[in-house]
Amino acid sequence: MGSIQKRKRQKRDGTSYHVWRAATRVRGRQVSSTFARKVDAQDWLTTTKGRKLNGTAVDPAGGRILYGDWLERWWATRRHAARPSTLARDESYLRNHVEPRWGEWQLAAIERSDVVEWVGALSDGGLAPATVRKLYQLFSATMEAAVTERHLGVSPCRSVDLPAVKREPMRFLTGAEVERLADAIDPRYRALVLVLAYGGLRIGEAAALTTERVDLGRRQLHVVQTVSWVKGHLYLHEPKTAAGRRKVGLPASVAEELADHLATVEGELAFPAPGGGHLQPNHFRRRQFAPAVRETGLEGLRIHDLRHTAVSFWHMRGVASDATAGGCATPMDGHVARFWLLRRSCCRSTPHDEVPGQELVPPRVMQQTLHRGGQIRVTGCIIDART
Image (cartoon, rainbow, N blue to C red):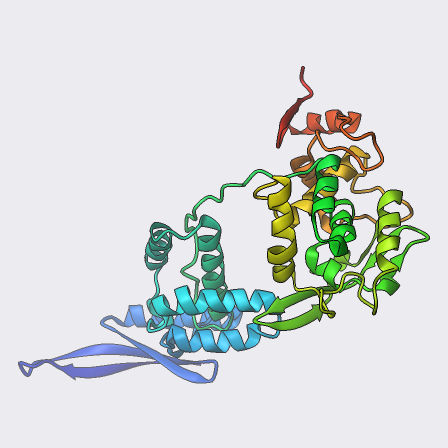
């Protein structure tokens, strides 16, 4: 229910005065507040009762919890709901940037202006905009959880301006450049380069691919798991999304190269590490991929750029989000949305089965650009449907 009581107080000079104390129970705990006027006490009691009825009443004791203690409780639930690689990154961000700033603050003491100041300090400190955004997202998630638990009435993370992330141009290779890279790399990984560039697999998916998931007759790869290495430990898990479990078609020439490669492989892994076992992406990047990139003059090329290259090849073939290739399901999970294809396709790329060096501009591109103001700009060219 709740109650309002008149209380007598005494000043230091000996004179007395009266206050009104309103009290009620919130989530099994008594809360109270004192006012100079009875009407204010009544208003507070009515408001608190209303919040109790609609489930938004806040326990004042919860607001006095130190953020560092709350973070520890929140992290205990988070660690069971994310991938090991994601947890390792987030744990580092929280330990190095979030907890040192807010650990000794009471939850209720954190104001929006404090958050704005913190975000500005992160940017001024030289952190990349994408990193600042991720730090803010993590901190905001912890404060929203405090609201959910009724420790706070509202999160201080609202209407905070974040630094803009500059989108870097996508990197694509031509068919001839892919061949040069495949020729330059350790012969044991020539087929891997071709599979990445024409199948669009992530390096972790390729490292987890087993021979039984390769159907050479249909020229298909069945992607069902991926591998990640976190602090020296191997983790095998399903792809990021349900759509990540997919069948990927390969051009005939790539399937032939893959067949020759598998004939030399021992064990169940399609692309094992030099010493056996699962390939470690970081080791492969440093020991095999980077030297081949330097040798071919493709400076700055990342392994993930081969995935972008695959999309450009599919686009050149007219593969759309509602299409299938060679009896396969959509070849590249969620990334095959038309908007994604238009942003990441390059008109200078050459399909694997086309004559090397031939440059094509698919009519489908000209049609779809009309939906985006008539023009689309991609790395190396501009396609303008208005002219």
